[in-house]
Length: 434
Ligand SMILES: Cc1ncc(COP(=O)(O)O)c(C=O)c1O
Image 1 (tube, protein in one colour):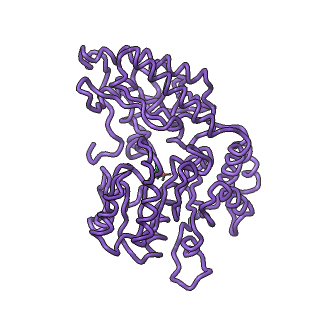
Image 2: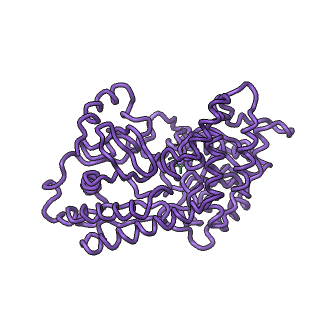
């Protein structure tokens, strides 16, 4: 496989775009050296790069593309809407239609406001919670890496540069499945925590009673419960993790899969909170997600079309089944090559990731790089194993075969990785220094 054209553009990308990509997770530091393709086009679960290489892709659009690239009913709907104009001086009818369609999926919510990025939706939720409670602090789940590009979240991340210390001090961390750690925060900062923010589920499943307990703690201590459904929404269930696990948040935030890669995110929740962003009340108003592009019509048309596909077809079942087939096949291949302990396949079937461990069993970026190097050579572009609706069983089986061959190389780890790894290792996307 040849990456000549992609590699030739690398310096130009970095000269014009900080990090060489508009999202750090897409950066070439996330890929083996000189094997970071620049994409020309995508169709279904496949992408083609500017050198003409073809890949089966996983985690498409940073998990936003759940149906597949250029999915016909979605792009048709967006195309039809483009002919009608994309942004007006007053709301377009489609803003109401999209709100009605969305709220059918999320019965816990009475109102919704659309925006373009997930970060804005989660930050908007926190702003509402602060206004509603009159408190400043927020308790976030420390096991969940990312909620927003904004200061309240990045200030306590692995890349806090540029965030004032005073803002960092307002964000506290508790542990997933550990109600005591949350209650301790409520006691240590009595009357100061406006909101509790977490995802429904990542690699670890919620313990029995965890979310009921969390709901009860929020009620007891007067905090708003915000569930971030950016990844779980339209993947775990059409209505997200809250519908799969019976979670009862006050506010929840969606994005990514909502419009199959078009830029639409949503803040949804109880009227009592959401209406602070309107003017049917006597309290001080909240400037809630009022953006120039929030009502962009072709994005909303794509969202409506995407939701319709979810209504008409067994998308969720397919995501879980294909993921299960992938997990089973990879596990069998890893076991038969003797790397099952080194390459764990983690997470729910609809949202799998792979681990990479060294001989000592420690997480290893060099071994992650080696594995990626070997699967990219075999036509698989995967920083995760997150499936979409366009992965056929044959695509899954092909992926398993490619990994099985890569595992044979991985198995040779006792000979020393330098013998096989062709360049520098990858690094975590969120890190404080280069
Ligand atoms: C759980 C979670 N919340 C929020 C966000 C932010 O979404 P966006 O990148 O659309 O701003 C992300 C993005 O990856 C995410 O994974």
